[in-house]
Image (cartoon, rainbow, N blue to C red; front, side, top):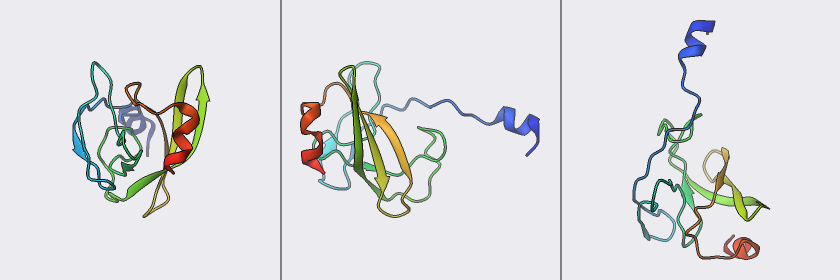
Length: 110
């Protein structure tokens, strides 16, 4: 790929605030309130592998369920690494602030 093509490729996240049905527990996940986005179920903390290299691009053909694999808590913010069951792709995401589980209890859902 040449320099011009690389410069045209999008690399910044695409904000998509959409409701979805959780493929793990069946919960109808509502849109995130305010200007936020959510890509995981607030009940079971599962996600679906729909994004490709850019968060929000919906470019993945995998569509496997993604399980929480690891977490980091810093400054009151929880970041969770999700791993795809089908292809082992990993992505780190912030938990949405309206989630009602304390950061030290996140691992209980794994």
